[in-house]
Every structure is written in C-alpha cells, then in structure tokens.
Image (tube, rainbow, N blue to C red; front, side, top):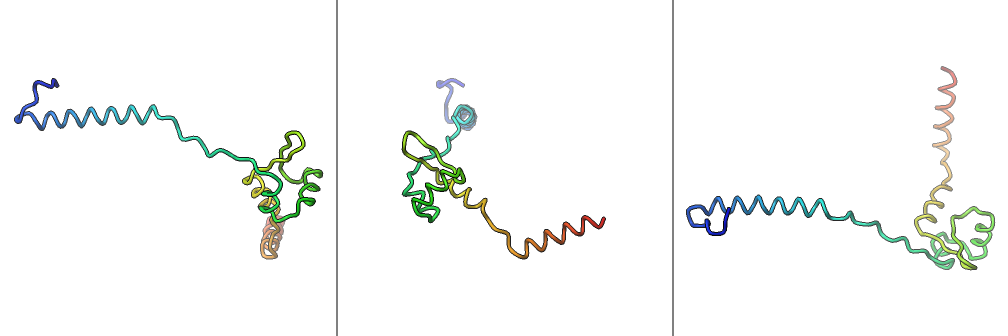
Length: 113
C-alpha cells in the first residue's frame, strides 16, 4: 500500500495494513532478541561464608582442608559461592523418625513380595 493511496475512504484498509506491518516487525524483533543471561555469580570471602553457614572461620578452614565444603582458591585466598554453600547445607539434612520408619516399612513390604 503506497502512502499516496491513503484517503478517508480506504482508511480501514490502511490501518489493517499498518497493524499487519507492526505484527511482522514485532515478531522479527522477538526472534532476534538475545535471551536474558542469568545473574552473575559473585564470589564471596570467608567472612561472608562464615555468616551464611553459621560457622567460625577456623571451622571453615578445617572443612576446606578436609574437602567437605565447596570452595575455590586463587593464590592464598578462598572464595565461595552462596548458592553452593546453601546447597551443601541442604544436602546434610537428617531424616526424621517418621521418614526412617516409612522407609523401613517400604523396604520390608517390598522384601515380602
């Protein structure tokens, strides 16, 4: 549709044409946009790590030496990531008495079959 053809009589056609053009442009823009990158993981020091997990610095050094806690070392300095520390804490969850009894029941029930 040319610019010269727009008049009061063919205004609905012109609006429909413009709506189609906008929809095409919108789909092109959406397809070419880069996906949002994840938040950057910022390393933290031993002071912040000790606050997150609630342990003293010497205890953290012991856990690092025993390779029980996730950490990174660059030179003489230790680095941690908060999400890894929280994941480490959640992996140490103890089962409740009810969970142990339920597992025992399921195990015994399956053995009888």
